[in-house]
Every structure is written in structure tokens, then in C-alpha cells.
Image 1 (cartoon, rainbow, N blue to C red):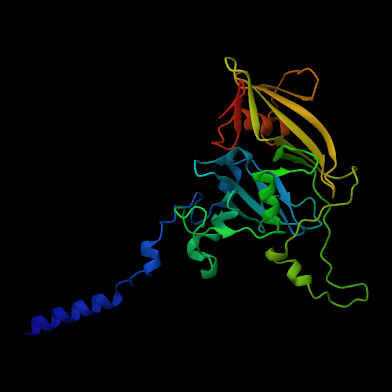
Image 2 (cartoon, rainbow, N blue to C red):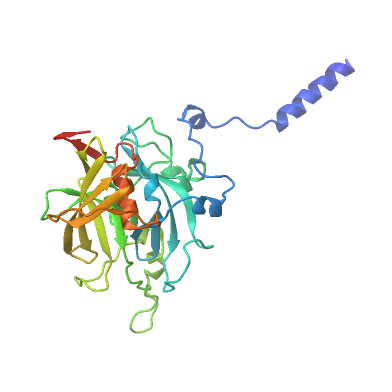
Length: 316
């Protein structure tokens, strides 16, 4: 009898300290994929193992991404590696510093206007934000609707393409030269009184994109690939070309010029000439962060279904 009582007490004690059953929605939910980066984070190693260029700027943040990681899968989801840092008047601030967030994997559903970020991992996400992508319910949890007039909406237009009023084509971001001038948020008005929305302007929901006036001097210049289209000029030698447009980053996005980028993928040479000019090939430089190297990788690299490869009038 004593043995029976002792056995029951052991079982009751063991049951008391066993982990509780997970919620029903966790059991029935689509499993969340494993993180792409190290846990616990090893930010320096993740940072040093990739190539970072500027993707976008807002009033308070600057986003950098690895253009070599940009890819689109069969579900039309675009993914890339990224990180962001707060903007300040210290232009010499190093990219890798204690204020940065990332690197992390970012995904965008261009058609459904949703985003999934590794920094908003499903277990850490607020309940009201943890739901499936209604356009693609078979994807993992953690998809969030991209709100209009936000910095992420601006990032989406660069990654997913945008159409200009005077142009029938859709332009996809390739590269930006220069940065926008930093404008500190106003904490007091002209009379010295605190600005009511000053704190809100520093929050992510109020993180807007500020562009300068229509000046074409001392403003950034960005380059877009027209229609994300690659043409096979010579299939045997694997020579490809892309039409590229450049714009001044001002309020009207004043057009600067059109170019033809031609890449010899086998010889690793390229030509970047104004549209209508004969190509003059040269070797790539050593910097993977340069415009020529980023454009060469976009033309010759493997980016899944992100690029549209055209051969003799046929597209991929």
C-alpha cells in the first residue's frame, strides 16, 4: 500500500512540473520556419559576411540591404537581407554600431501588399498583428499589412516596382548614389512651445519619407531597371543587357538619363553607356558595393523569378 501511495505521489509531482500544453492555434498553425540568422544573434559575423548598400531613407532611419541576396520564389515572395540604423546629423557614423537593428531576413508579398520580417518573429509579435497572409494562407505566420504613407511602403515601391506618370514602364530599384540631407525633427515650435506630435514623429508609424525640392544639385541620384527585364544579346557567350533609367531624388523625381548596361557573364566584363551609344566593355572593379558590380550581379546572378529574362521576343 505504501508503495502505491509513493508511486502516485511521484506521478502527481511529475505532472505538476511538466510543461503545459501549447495553445490550440499553435498546434494547428503552419510551422514557422527556422531563422535565417544566428540565434543568439551574431550581428558582426552576419554583417561582415554580406555586401550592404543603401536601400531607402526616411525622416529617422536608413535601410541597407544586400542586393546579392535579393530573390523571388515560386509564390512571388521577394526576400532579401537587411538592417536599419537611426539617422542623425553624424554623417560619419559607421554602419555597424550599437544602434543598428539586424541583419535580418525581410520578405515582401508585392501583389498582396504584406511584409514578413525576421525581427518581428511570430512568437514575439503582438496578438493583433500575428495572422496569416490572406492572399497566401499557406505561408508562415507573421505577415503584416503594409500601411500607406510609411517608410516601408516606400521600400515596397523600390523593391516591387513603380510606374511614373510620363512612362508606361515599371521601374525597379537598382542603386542610389548619395544620401538625403538629414532634417532633425522639430521638438519646439517658433515660439518655443513643445510640438505635440514630436514624439509621434519618431515612432515607426509616423516614420515618413522626406524628399527635397526640385533641385538637381547636391541631391541623391538613383538608378532603376526598366521592367526588371534582361535581354539575352548572345546566348552562346551569355551576353545580357538591361535598360536603366536614372533620376534625381527630389519631389518630382526629375529624370537624369537612360542607359544600356551590357554584361558579358562569362568574361566578367561590362559596358555602361548612355542609350544609343556603342558599348565599350571594361573589367569589373574590386568593390562589390559599386554600381557596376551590383548591376552585373542583377544581370548575371541568380535571383529566382525576380528578373524577367527575354530571349528573341520570349520572356521567362
